[in-house]
Length: 443
Image (cartoon, rainbow, N blue to C red; front, side, top):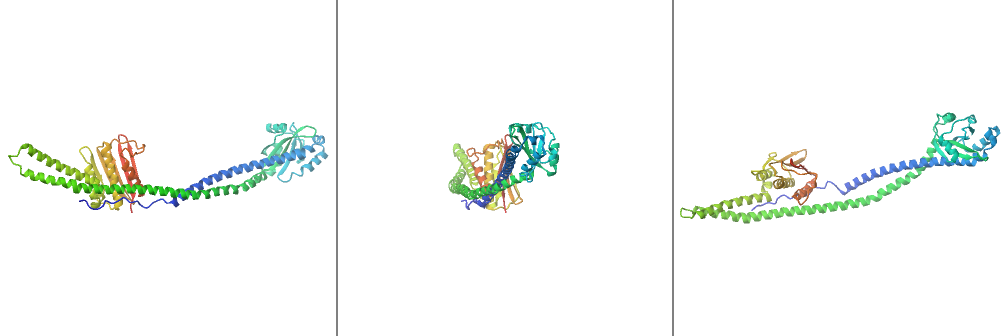
């Protein structure tokens, strides 16, 4: 009777934990929040700048319509010095801070008033948008081009923003009022705004991240439990399969094989009593029955080795693989083994690699229509690898392997290989052949 249990495929320690999964989720979430935060800061920056420009336009509108416009007199338009002095007193309330210059133009491009008196009376053509603003009363803002002649007295202030809008004098004449404001003051106003909003944005993102962590932890634990349950079910199936293999092998060895051996002995004894008086048909029946009985015994013993390889536990993986290739070789298929003389591996790893080779060879014999198949085994750099290469018809390896086309065994082994921290790769091309490679770490 066959004795000794076949080494069982037990699960290696898990390489991934709930904490690791949550840490990866947290890192990914941090990167996403960082990107969202950067996008939010950029939006807030533009929003703050737009709000600062809006405030600059509001200041210009209030000054033009509330202070300068009502103070325009025919004497000011004629360039009267006393009228200019009165306008100086009026605009003095808005100049000196953010506003460094004011100008008032008529429609012909003549400066009728400026707090820089050297500009009064000079003429400069109005640009299209300035003329539109004069006629419509719409305010516009832009960075000042200090290279223009009309801006030569503002160059010492550095970067400026000019805001202009059309106003109506008391006599009904349309004029263009223009203020020049320090760009740094406008920008600082925008920064103050988005600095005020930034903590709210960052706080909301941080709160969102904090609220997600418990959910992520719970989800990771549920996924881990589900994976463990699936793997336990797979292990129970593999264990049950191994137990059933041992039971079937034992029943066949102790029952049918022993019966056939007894029949073979009795037929051999009967053949010794054959003489010239024995009818020839009876002689042929005894000889044929003896031959067929011995063939049946050999076939059953070969099947027993397939079901339960005793050489794996007695002599190791290399011997078991050698037996496997010998049995796979036929007049049509030539199988060979490339392996070192001895490989010292844990029993669980030996059992896993043997099962992989056995399943691969079974698929080669059943589906590949190959002439040659080679099993390779090597150990290097803390890993052991098994390869099974055939020259058969091959298949499209881009298509998923299904459980109804003979690949269920490989799919189950693939799960166990991954559990051992290894990997299983299958590459194939139609008309070229197939290569299966299993690699697992060993200590």
